[in-house]
Image (cartoon, rainbow, N blue to C red; front, side, top):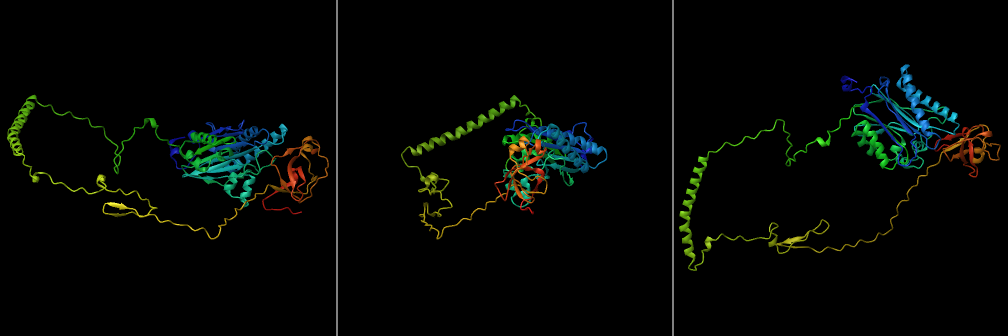
Length: 496
């Protein structure tokens, strides 16, 4: 990129020093199922600078494979669609939908119950930013020291927030905060969340990350790292900070800056400045230092003549002072007192703080909680403290009972599909889905007890099953075909 483009106030294209990424397994996980992608030197960034983070779902099989496959598919399909003339938003949405199909088909080929990945991608093109995501991987924008989240999590807890049942603060600590409602690869189709177009400014910083980062680092911890470092260093330091904070998941961060970071000079090359006097500005010399000029040489004859004059003066002083000293001694030798007028007057010493020895009594230090001491002459007297009796309250104070917010579990309604039966786990695992005595009619409301489904074989027809419990009859608990359950929003009910 040339100097003209670099100085252009509108961000364009890609510079290697403006983007960086880092990922780590974290202190508790055995495998890293996160992955990221940033532009390489041969990337066609004139079609848009794409960055992305993928987080394989840990509770499902082959999460790492799902994340890597999704990442490869998105950046390949995005640039293919851009070369075909599609807009950035259309190409990005199509790329995520194609990645969903690729992961889903791979799961079918591997004959696994489910494999999936959360995903977030951002494209910067001609100073405009567009973000797409599925799941709870996030995108942030940092502008002038303030951090703003650009994505909204696809999680059950976020639905509770949207319904007004819990607050954002409660959601951040909720035990179900990582239960996602959709990911790439779990189903043949996916609803891609596509953001509006954000106009970028010089100095803006974009952060993409997995939940392993923001779960343990608050915005106040991340902002100084992002604003005080280059893209590559910031990504690495964020991951290290999350590791130090004992993250319980894999950690990934990708950082993109809209202008180069200008670090301070190396501290080893700095010269410590002189400490100026109070209220005086520090002066920095702007000219070369002045070379000191040696004093002029002194002639030896001049030195000798000066010594002769000094000796003559001393001799005169001695001649005059000796008779005077003899006369004074003779005046006191006869025992007569010396005239008091010849002595210097004696000043009376008053007790002051500058002369503490003259004080008769030193007043103790009195705090603002004690009565002020009354001072008379030079002695400080302290008035006695008054005894204050606090009467007991006439009636006991009743504290309000704290309100306990009960968060309901995910619920659903049984639709009018075929075979609305409930099986136990062994039947699903063994593929023995014969007709059972337990069944639920259309419109029955159920609790969804687990977000992880089971894949049934044999007579179960290769369907996915969810663990549920009947709301009307809690004794009916087991596994029902996922296709028969329509999830409902908090506060909604089922109508027969």
